[in-house]
Image 1 (cartoon, rainbow, N blue to C red):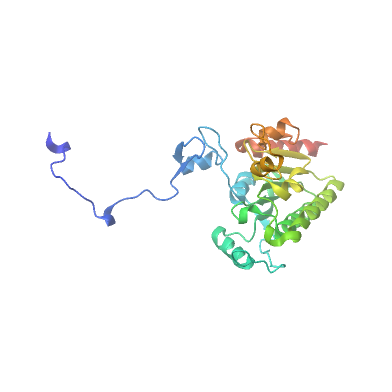
Image 2 (image 1 turned 120 degrees about the horizontal axis):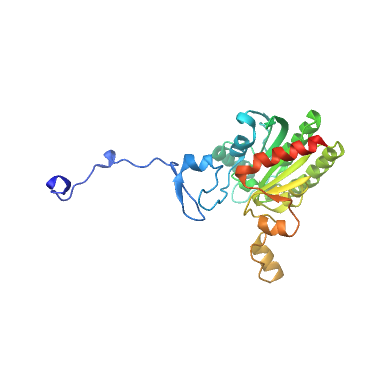
Length: 282
């Protein structure tokens, strides 16, 4: 029975003959450490099959999730930030923008598209956290504003998927102006009786929370999302007190009346479609 025994010692395999697992084949949940095949993770809308942890995903994944057959027309895709303040920190702002564009394949931290959700025409703007932390600069505000204008022109609902670290410090006051700009555009949308759905994902903070993220006719959040203005550490240091358990999670905000619903990502399209049908009947 020597066929299953190692009779020679020191057997080695040349490096060029070793087989390695391809990158991206498996996904490990950062919460429960469950390891699943990446394809299975995608089939569950990028949520953990064990603990339902909602992984951070970008506009590519959300557009795939929402738009019927992943068919849509992207709007204002070529807009890119300029450098109005000639800002330099560890590197010039234009260089930082180019590096982010090369890394992510995006032009800025938001994409806007027109398409159908369960047969209903909508305009969706979705933020990407991978682009300088989803920070809100002039281009982000402009693309969202143009998206709202497109919804008004087409007489269709507007959906905003928020994921941001807040205002973009490299644009200072220009960034903060986007809060008023987008809020004013949403007021025009409301005057025309067109629905606005705000979907808050992890994380939604800073000036985004203080403006369009919380102005929806209906505000929906994903489970466990961090939502707030300043981060928990900053708040704790400012007030000098320990914070309540689960402070600034979507569950905490729902309990305190800041949200209408918490919806699992796997059910998000159906819930949004149901709401659109409901307001359409009115």
